[in-house]
Length: 139
Picture 1: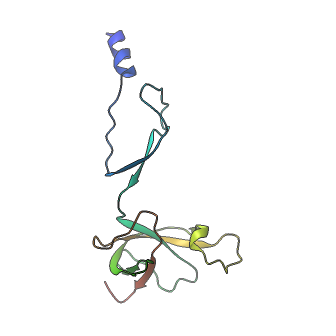
Picture 2: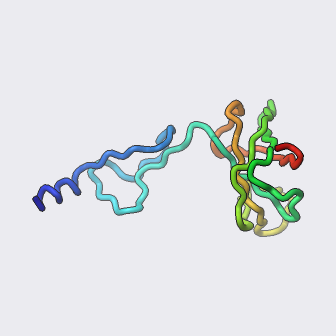
């Protein structure tokens, strides 16, 4: 019984991923030993469902869950639609350098993160930079 248990523990395990996507990096191959918590593969999403935005101080508006947000792409044909704030961060966090104006001289700029839903009709790629504008009047 103990031998069968050890064989079952060392046998292959089928992994199921809870999302659609494309394999973009393979860290381990079949037959390799993997320690708990070690990455095996990276799966990149095919489309975005939400985006993280940052509000710089002073906050022009106090963000709340459910507030309407104008989402505008930066392509040649700037598409625009409305999403909603899904979550508001609890603390200021460093803003990625790619999102900060090159005219800023501060080493690290902080912002309050907000999670915004992306409308299904707005075609964006994961990682694409979009412009966000909170409309405090709209609900």
